[in-house]
Image (tube, rainbow, N blue to C red; front, side, top):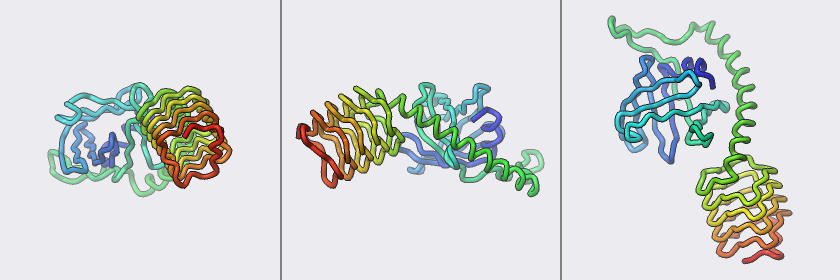
Length: 251
């Protein structure tokens, strides 16, 4: 998203944030102040800003040790995904309320920060069209980022990642969360997938020759047509696996 889009979206809005296994809500005030509360009831305050290079920066008083964290935001439907400077996904958020009424600090009167009803209806139609186009572009961008990071991403959260046909020869995905990931026809020869979490993953037609899946959880995964020649599967969870031909695999 551009700086202009973020500066329009966030003031007087409340977001539901999911990041690093934590959830919470952040309220953005137009004056750059923010208040937040996480799922454990802990609260903090801080400042937010949007930079001219299209990044959203948050600085809490105590959370994250008071460090300023800046992320690029990619809109995908009603979900907004956060990416750090290295292009890695670090979280996502949804808009809980937008354009809420704010209070004039001098008069104490509540004023609306939103558009008129007619303007809102026109803007909504334009916004839906823009979001549909942006979502298509965002999905392609996210897919490209996922494919690039999956080449060396041990312990990463890649759940439900769209990696069909990805070239991941020798990739390091040890301990990665790939539950329900789309890995159809992916080339994973000699990939390191020790202790990876793959329940429900679609691995139909995947090339796993020589891959190390020792201790991996493949419960319910679809391995129809997958190449498992010399694939290491010692200690792997294989119950309810579909269509697997273990000929030549190490079990």
